[in-house]
Image: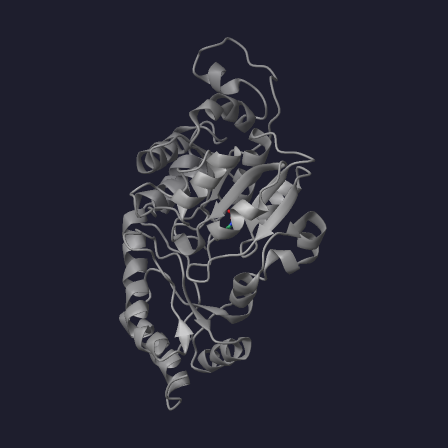
Amino acid sequence: MGSDAIIPFHRPWRAERETAYVLEALGLARRQGGGPFTRGCHALLQAQLGAPVLLTQSCTSALEFAALLLGIGPGDEVIVPSYTFSSTATAFANRGAKLVFVDVDPATQNIDPRWIAPAVTQRTRAIVAMHYGGIACDMPAIEQIAAAHGAVLIEDAAQAVGARAPDGRALGAMGALGALSFHDTKNVSSGEGGALVIGDATLAARAEIMWEKGTDRSKFIRGEIDKYTWVDLGSSFLPSEITAAMLKAHLEEAPTINAARLAVWNCYHDAFAALEQAGWLHRPFAPPGAMHNAHLYYLVLNDGSARDALRAHLKGAGVETTTHYAPLHQSAAGRRFGRVASPMVSAERAGEQLLRLPLWPGLSEAEVARVIAGVRGFFEGRGSE
Ligand SMILES: *Cc1c(COP(=O)(O)O)cnc(C)c1O
């Protein structure tokens, strides 16, 4: 590869054992979900999270599963950050609930607890905390508000697999329910995939039934009953053994993957400190003690045109970058299915001024240096803001 080859924004990880495991799954007598690879993934995730887990076909389906399991429906309100992926909201809109959008904290792009309490009404059923870039939301503050108002706390931990909060708790396992993503663009991946984490043990029995299309098939498989029947609502959430086989290979390598990502993240973070000091940009903020998983690295520029100009400059230098969310409250569906419950200064700022840099394990030191040189080159000769 030449030194000026394009540096892609993302390159999916190839786990050492993924081919062997997938071949093994193909050779199984039964390749439907719930077999040995599914059980292996459940065990690995449960050990890390300290809560039971059910694999799903995606994080989107895990969020839909959460909405179904909590019986969220018409007349209910769900508080979500505006700066997030659409699935955080769609899962609840699909059930007929009203979304209530609040702004994010400009330091982390995570839901800002200051806006949650004022957004609560008698109809509030749930609050969704999405951990942007795998950096923990201010969970103690959000938990306090949820408890005070009797709202259920759900975590969209799509980006946070392997990350922990400053108090040591695993992200995804702090709420009543948590949703993980194993999409190709996430740290740990099976192409498409996800999981529902069941933090509230009282939901576990019903979750197992809904996972098996509303039947008590899991009890049947364990030999607890001699035939299974339809007993509740549910859907087809579980992935096949082939997907679970790939996931198991990635989960086993998760510490390696996250350590490699963290090394790149730290390089960027050190390199851009001076530009932040000079007033040109803001770097991500990780609260002291937050054990994040380096899911992404971004810069927030001082205005939208600077962001777009930096993006064009880096493209010219062979560095692929990407923006992120268009705030949900401004989208067509957001306006239809939600309402705005706070000022939206920070969500709109992130929508216009945030740029994500290439970050994947296997990005070489030379490539990281080229990205850094590209960003520095853009600001060269500009002094300070
Ligand atoms: C990736 C992502 C999702 C969706 O995950 P899928 O597994 O692709 O359904 C949901 N929420 C957030 C915050 C995400 O980053």
